[in-house]
Image (cartoon, rainbow, N blue to C red; front, side, top):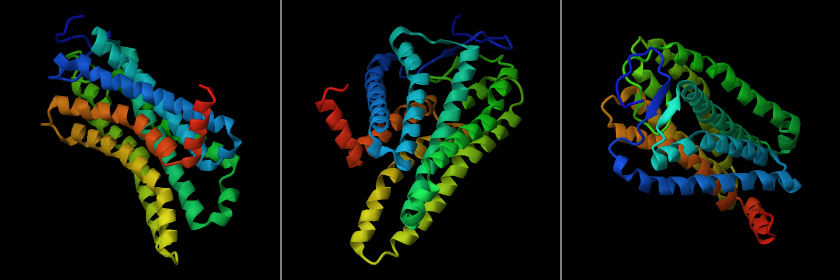
Length: 316
């Protein structure tokens, strides 16, 4: 299929343009992308393996970290191989159904599940800091499993209509997507029908997942900081705040590109396409790798020690 306008209501394929205005350096751009992807795969698989095999790490925070690592792995695998195929082999074509499926997976995993697991971590910290005596009573293994299941079911219920809405839209403007992967707002802009309901639905779904989670996380940290600054000694302040530091970094890494991408697509109508595409790639590439560095290796001594021990004993 040529790079031209498509008058069909449902094109059989879309064409991923990559990063607009940067086509000449796609090969060079692909190198750091590939390294980040491999690092994310190795690191997150290591986290899952270490936490599964070490019974000393079978605690709520580590279980939620496992869930977040699993989400990061699926996000990376859903998008990065196709991006690299585009950069290396000009594999731009993506089937209509595959494109819609990718949109659903990206939004459900990034905006819903990852956000929900970060909220669960915030709840774990809230209970551990504000009332540590009941921490083990409240966050039992059964409760942790039910929380994880509830987060997944919430995303499925809220975002299940999304593929059908995209399926019903007529796409008669063009079949070219100026991105490296299929993205909801990018597809909406290709439709030649009224998309107000789709946009309202998207805004509502984002608020009820990532937006609401972010508000609850902020509320939990207000209570946490109020409790921390009520401690008698400055040493106790610093020790408790250091416990929260890694989680705060994960929150910033997860939400900053997410919100920026959403608001620029929704309200930044004059934003250059290559900037939108670049931010969209940060949204996909950075959190899976940085979450590992912040939470799994750099700031958590127990996981870091187990990781180094596994390497030196040739388990990998």
